[in-house]
Amino acid sequence: MTSDVLTTPSALVSAARDLIDGRVTSTSDAWPRAAALLARQALEEAVRALWVGPNESARRSSATHQLLCARVVLGDELAAEAFQAWAALSQACHVHAYELSPVAAELRGWIDVVERLVEAR
Image 1 (tube, rainbow, N blue to C red):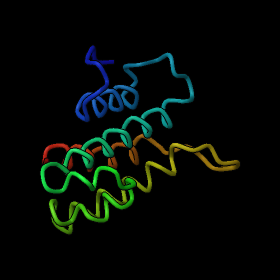
Image 2 (image 1 turned 180 degrees about the horizontal axis):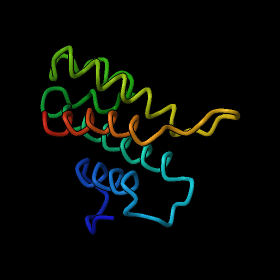
Image 3 (image 1 turned 90 degrees about the horizontal axis):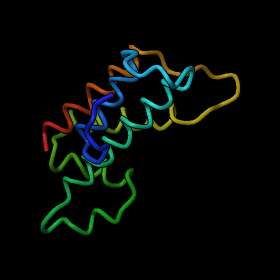
Image 4 (image 1 turned 90 degrees about the vertical axis):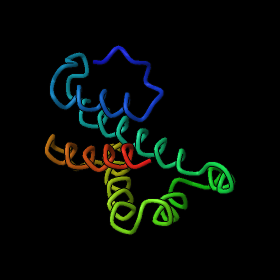
């Protein structure tokens, strides 16, 4: 795992990729959910960072509301992809009976969206 403190969206994304790529081996079978949690946190932090200046009050809204309003800043396509990735990552963070964890390819796709969002801010 990277030596960065996990406080920036970029560091969180890097840590999620480390889990998916097997560079962290102490998580046994929990790595998919751990990677999803890190990626979702990175996405939420990147979206929260959009709301500065006159839009500061939006930071107090839920992640859902911030993502719905993000099209004003990000454009329709990236905002829609970010919302879909957030919903999928949120679902992947929770253990549900008889439901499989996400596979590495799914996680990589969602993390690619998160990285584009981080770069867009």
